Structures are given as C-alpha cells and as structure tokens.
Length: 291
Image (tube, rainbow, N blue to C red; front, top):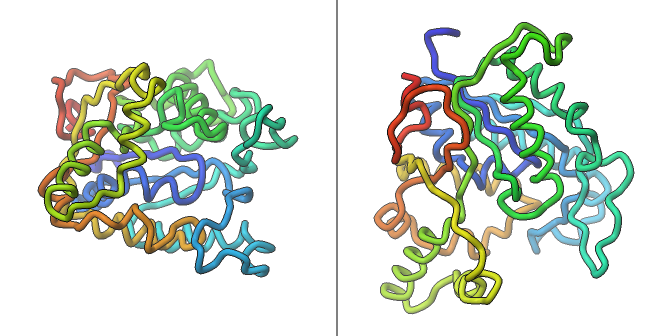
C-alpha cells in the first residue's frame, strides 16, 4: 500500500463521481494510483432524467437497484474502487416555501453520526488526498452540503486517535480539495469557442445566470489546481452515460465536440481547501507535495 498514491473521492449520489473529477480519477488510475469513490447515498429519490427511460414503471419501482447497477458499470469504466456509506437520499426539495426533508434522510443525520463510517473508510484506505464539495455543495442540494460537512469532519478527525476511537487506527490524509467543475472561466471559454465555430452554444442559460443580479454578486471560487486530463474525457463521458437514468444522451452535456473541449479547456479543476504538505499554487497535480 505504501508504494502507491491513494485518492479518495467523496460524493453524495451515484453519478456525481462521473460528472465531477472523473477524468482526473481515470488519469490517476492509469498512472498506477489507487482511487476509491465513496458514495454517501443510494440516489433513491433521484428522478429519471433520461427521456428515453422516463415513465418506465419497472425502473421507477426498482430505482435503488437500478442506480446501484449503474454505479457498478461506471466504476468499471473508470477503473476505480467504490464503497457505499449506506445513507438514504434526501431528494431535492422544491416549492415555495420549501417542504421539509423526509425523515431518516442523509441530510438530517447528525454530522458526527454520518461522518463515522467515512472516518472508518479513511483509516482503512489511507488516502493521501481527498476530494469532495465546497460548503455550498457545488450547488445547494442538501445531500451535497451534508457530503461537504462529513468530508471535512472526517478529514480533520481521521488522524486523531481520540476521535472516533472505534473507527480504526488513525490515518491523516494530507490534502483536501473541493471539486470546481463548472467554473465561470471554463463555461465562458467553451461558450465563446462554440459560438465562434458552430454559431450555437449550450451555455446560453449559464451566461444569463452569470449576468443576472444574483450571478454578479456571487463571488468566484479560487481555483488552485488544474489537472490535465483531456485524453480521459471519453472515459468520463462513458462513465456518465452508464448512469442511464440520470443522463440524457442527447442533452447539452455532450454537445461540445471533444476536440473543442481538449483544445479550449483540457483540465479538471479543484480548490485546495487543506494541505499538510508544502505545495506551490497554482498546481497541476492533486498529489503535488505528496509525491
């Protein structure tokens, strides 16, 4: 184990691992690192977003099993290991006022309760680097926000023998990152390239949000780390398509030609939140300072 670099990616639902940092994970797997995806919930309350499968009564009746099978396919495509924390999807509340979250769901668990199995996994797998979401969840889904909370709690606690003493021998990860997939810089660059080369862009809605009063007031995150991984974008897309209930294969996610993506923005991007090793910003490697 000590001969290999180890990366743990903590995500809220099956499919999140394939839309956030998947090409980076595939690159590190190809380079010989060990990568473990931790999935906090089963995605039981996720809607069927693929119009080809919407309304399929068997899928909707067995959505938990379907999403586990989709996760298995995505895991195999990316070459990663994967573990379930076993919590129940909270769903995304909608309406005004927002309805209460369902009893027993992940987002309502006490942070210490929900973090303990993650601490145990960290101590067993012994990652050098952990990735998760920022305090806003990347977007304000209650499970994403809770995923952030327990990831930070586990990162800070895993190396402390006095915390969670029943969760195994201490292990301190060295770096914690937040995924920053949909950065304004990336969206603007791809939008401009698509308009120039095709006359149309799937990002018109994004641009409108950026230009709205709320968008102009929202501060930009600091992107510290750009990981070159363009040659793994096909694997990323294959893994995402494996989550067939969650992705429209004809949707905007896949509308930017691969050659444009590789030329304009061939990286996946992260925000360094904690580092216990010396590193120099900006980085191009999650393991900078660890190798």
